Length: 557
Image 1: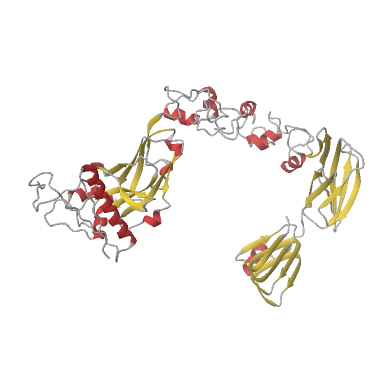
Image 2: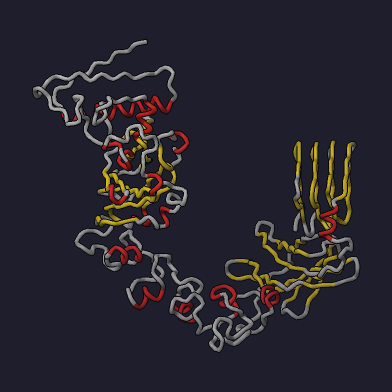
């Protein structure tokens, strides 16, 4: 409706529309390239530029002014065919007036919008809404200020426009009121149904009858609350008045909801997961309060978890602290961004926590995905986030591996039981402080192609193919070895004697030297991080299972 001003060094448009119904379009910049439609049918298009290219463009305006030393212009045939070549000069004249009181200056500012901005505007006032007199006339303006010489209680104000073509149109009046709080501006509502006359005239309802269709609901209630048709008695269900109908299908009639204060346009007014009807007639909870007992858990969640929504201490422990085992199945919506058709696995979660895990837990692809991605990673890394109000006792990530990902990718270590099939996969956690991936103890259900790991904290997790990881590190195993001679997070490290049977030491408690070489030259960052993680995993195992351990670090350049 208003002016559009574009300025800067370069303005480019491509198949765009710049449009104002009643204002001007002003483009003032060094270099302008226009392509599409510039449309100001009742205003001016003013273009000032050093270099102007209007290639394949249509400009429509009351006046067009171009100030530019360098101009290239081409016609847009396709846009012209779309718009048509016959001008439409038949514009419906409409004026909408409104106002505001300026208490500092003790004046009333009167404004109006019109479909035809050029013309004369006569501002008129009345004490009774019937007999009007003029307080001023302006030309080609959209505002007028006036200070009344004497105090008053009520005045009606309207604007009458006369166009240059002698068409006339008057606005719906609005009110200037005065009470103990001072002056105020209010829309006219002749039938006191809370729907201003200006809206009623637009909708076609009767501005002098609060219930145009006689269905028991006011025009305002139908337009704003029930979203029914104020012109039709039975717009929801044939033969049934809109007041007795149930617009949101929650079991409560529209008039019943309006009487109770619930919302007839939604079946769950407080958005707690329970319908208004169920809260009132089944659970005796407050349909306008998501947490009826004020314990921090929504009523719907309490019903789902077997708690009492009207008792904050259902089991003798505050409901907000009561730990409940819960399962997030693979088809749950909170896992939808992870369990896609392209994912190599279907993730599910078992969690024992206070609160409703479905409401408090968020699982999405991790923001670290790009940073930690490597050839050994299977699928996307995930970020497990849980609200501060929840303190989980356990979180178990369960991965159901799709059939095409169950077999060894390389086959290099497929003969080793610890690295065959899905047992070659392992859950890792990304340690933000150390900036590296760390393995987590992983269990397997080989028969059902499922692996799982208890993580017990929020963070970033991923699946790694240990066979690919070992291969990237250049790990080699003796031909007859039954297990790797380097540690893996899949099992405790074992040594081998060259036979297929498990190695038995000649004597127990023999001293053992563990030597690790961390190669820093010639490796990319992923390989270097995998070396560090492997060394850390082995050392963690040693420190947990041995008492006397001496550590020596040698730095060779």
